[in-house]
Length: 71
Image 1: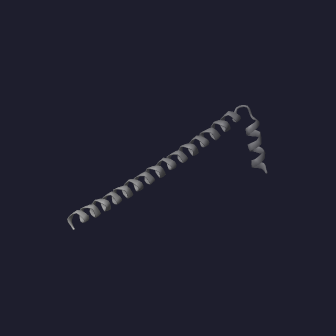
Image 2 (image 1 turned 120 degrees about the vertical axis):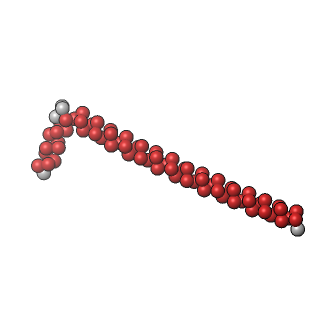
């Protein structure tokens, strides 16, 4: 309980309140950047997988077409 009282006093203190606010904003900014990086990396992985799948299917079409022409 004593820690809670010290924290409440610190929050009500005019000098401590901006520090707490800036700390919360900094934490929120770090969390937001982390989420954005994760989403970007997921999209890049998805697009790379899609590109590989398209190349494999095009190669299969090419092989089938060449097999049809040759045979």
